[in-house]
Image 1 (cartoon, helix red, strand yellow):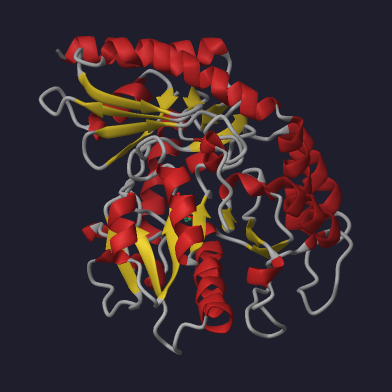
Image 2: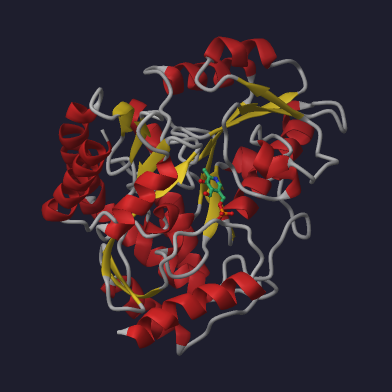
Length: 406
Ligand SMILES: Cc1ncc(COP(=O)(O)O)c(C=O)c1O
């Protein structure tokens, strides 16, 4: 199969030559996907344990979602919000129902939805809370990841994400993740919101201490500060519940959603909030050419319908139990720590054995795709359609790779 090998090499070479090097991909060129599995240009199959950073919660080429997208592609794809379209109404109603909020504001990428939440929070601060003009502050968490725009990287503490991009946007105060006392001390009369991930995905599936969400909810209510949950990666069934905030039965003031909202087919993001907050957005004060387009809305409506059935959340929880049972015995046997929430795991590898990148490469050799983060950590987020055998393959492979390196 020399011909196909050169196809892989040539795709990589051409991509590296003409596309900016903003990622450090594993050397695999994917051509097809079905459920939890993908196939490369050489015909080799891989279990996808990254799932598009959780955009593919429902699996590759999900039949229901592809059917809806195909149907809509042949009818109407873009109107702009200068006009109404016959799909946004149903999507807005469905997503408002799923979140329990009065309204949604649809955008495209996750970063745009985070930007939207920041703008809405600031405007709410000035118009409803009465913060003096131009002084709004938002409290953010150390180790956060909320996207890549200049404002969002302004409150990142990751040097790689920020280096060379100054000057940054002001108005953010960073505190230790999961530390409610630190948040309470950082709040003053200018504070409009606390922006946080209920589970820090890019940080390595970092979960806050038990009770954090409950305490943060109480604090935000008491101090009249918006609780803004970035559920772009943690939400929509990834953590075993519809939203990661559901693990403590907590409802934030603003939900930020993205990734799986577009079913892994199309970028769809949104924020959801009640009238008191969302009504600060008036005609002309915010917008997006593609936000709320009929193709996005059709796919998003089907995503909500699938989530309302509850089966993906239940399967995510089951996968989580299997991951926890399989990975726990490896702590002290090559892993220094593991964190599992639903079908979402972060493993910290003993740095004396190998790096996260080396683990990802070894897994790739065995037909499993996963991605390292922060040196020694690898995340697993398989599509929620993965079978017991798939998860078993993942756990067994990690165990064998660690044993071979010991
Ligand atoms: C929690 C969180 N917020 C925001 C984003 C940014 O989303 P996007 O890459 O679609 O802009 C991500 C992406 O990984 C994320 O994990």
